[in-house]
Image (cartoon, rainbow, N blue to C red; front, side, top):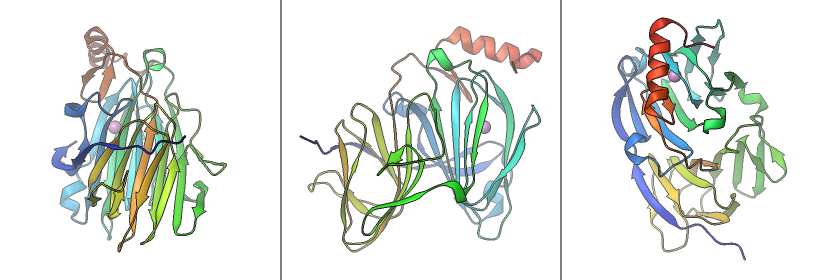
Length: 282
Ligand code: CO
């Protein structure tokens, strides 16, 4: 028998400042660890005031994690110390596996409608923390949309829905990253992998998640679910748009220093020393 996941926790995104002075909302982060394992952090950048975002994220290192950037409005220019560069445009996603190390900058571009995007950090297990860095850059045009039910549209970025696979593949924690829109007056059950961590983040509208006793969840709230096989979403008068993310928990010790996340303090010290003496990039 299929079990519908119950809500474990609901959190509101909190205003904070990051990078060289970017005002953003932190959906979850260090204080919530290890609740969202394998995920470490998620930020929501949403502003039509250039002063809130133009300072950007100048050159900084990452090691031991993946950063997943999804842009809904505006664009983010990206450049790394190995000469890779590009622009993440509206609708595009960049799945960056920092692995053994990347030093990069991420600079939101000033644009008329403003900036709206998300960055998720996914941890890597000890076996893959020092893997070679790689990028999966996915333009909006190559993200398939499936409609498993009338009134339900799902952009499959990573994972598989109704036999359709997303373009981001071969990720260690076997994650799903879905952008789901459901019109008003609809109930939809989506299958999710049992045993995996699952959360949803409402970005527009509102819906009831989980069993019928649950409350309406509005935008800028994240829901972490208990274990089970499906997530039930019910809309009433309003439509909803939300991200659904799942991944296999890693269950290892976490040593976290800013943008570097390893298993032990010694590994953090090594990373910082290498960054100082110029041997960080492998
Ligand atoms: Co970064």
